[in-house]
Image (cartoon, rainbow, N blue to C red; front, side, top):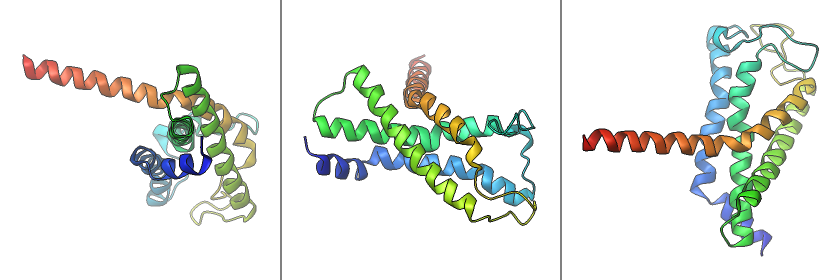
Length: 174
């Protein structure tokens, strides 16, 4: 059990980088749409459309969709890979999901620090005065809730991927 070996193995893992890159791209898509349209409202991702108190943002559907991949699932994969290399053995189901949970929480915490300090800089969007470029710290609790659920994102995607493989194999045989 070597922390340094597990860390370097995680950082050099192709699986970790593929999840990270895809997660960041998914995270950036709404940002690019906002800048391209010049509006902070993205109609199909803006549900419920209004803030519920300070803790539930008006773009809750976007937040769930985006945060399920980055930082949630990206951290979950990092935690899984790290634990696998740290223990140097196949993980039990309980250990797998616990390591995913810890990884997701660490990534969300790091991302929340980044968002918090960015929010304090008060960088406002040029096309929407008064709209900070970074997230308000009021939504951090919901980020942690989404990250808790995002430990299942890799499993769900692998199940869907295997279903498509079986369907394609069945269609080719027929």
